[in-house]
Length: 181
Ligand code: SF4
Image (tube, rainbow, N blue to C red):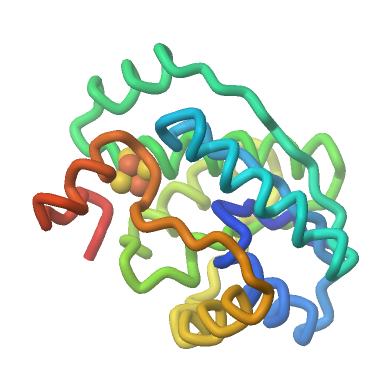
């Protein structure tokens, strides 16, 4: 069965891809992460994925939009910036799954023990509902260590913070982002 996999970064994609393929899915990746700041960091994560994906025969669609002003406005205007950030990414992925007639989508965010899975599930299901596509929620957190191992073996860049400028600050202040648990 075909599935569109939203990819937050290459390290998280390693173990999720393995799991999905082992379950028989035919996976296409989709990179869409406009909240990553600054642009240099965005480019670094994008390039890490572009380098790794061909080595595992993973077709990936790259959305390289970087609407900084709109993104900052969205994050600042939200009661919970992480939920809005998830919702934006799941909406775009659902739209692409609908256009591609894939019918099913999921996200590598589900491998992270630091992300709020309830937010992800809600955002994915809300994005899927109006488009007659389905969000596959799977709790891949047990594969997190595997993703570390696979990404280290591949010599991949591993980022030290979630993505947005707030999370970059919070890592130094040791503050949890509102989407983290
Ligand atoms: S901490 Fe992560 S999930 Fe939350 S808004 Fe920033 S980039 Fe998005």
